[in-house]
Length: 188
Image (cartoon, rainbow, N blue to C red; front, side, top):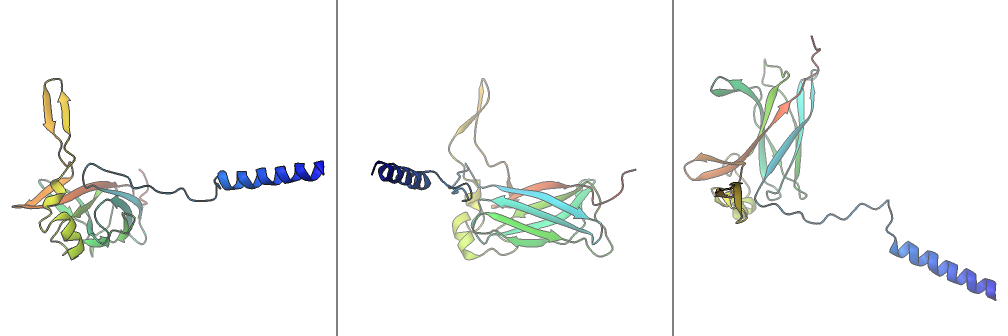
């Protein structure tokens, strides 16, 4: 009888430990993360010589279905030289986007180009559900948490969205860049 009591207590303890201790094979639960304003982040994850292409991925807290515009450019004095046409990629339910982009006909990607990613309410036309959240002209993208930023001992500034860009008049969007690394070229 003593042995069966010990076995019963042992089995209850094992069962209780299985219920209380989380399994390491389960994915951790994701809790919603907050941000003081809308953001857009992009990363180049690969650039290949053959076939010549750039792969990218990014994250944002823009609404699901928002279309992010991506293209490869380079500085050209005071302007940009486009190495690709624009590609539009949707934001997933989880806030991610990804894609691949090829160069324009007759061009090749090379090291130190820039991948530009931006969100605009007008190009391409965004879904109505997205415009409802960010405003028809992107005006809600300028909203930030009401926190003053202390720049120095005697200077405080209101917080602003560092990625906010003003396209034209009162139309706003988000803009960011990422460096395109070596596209398989051999170092000299």
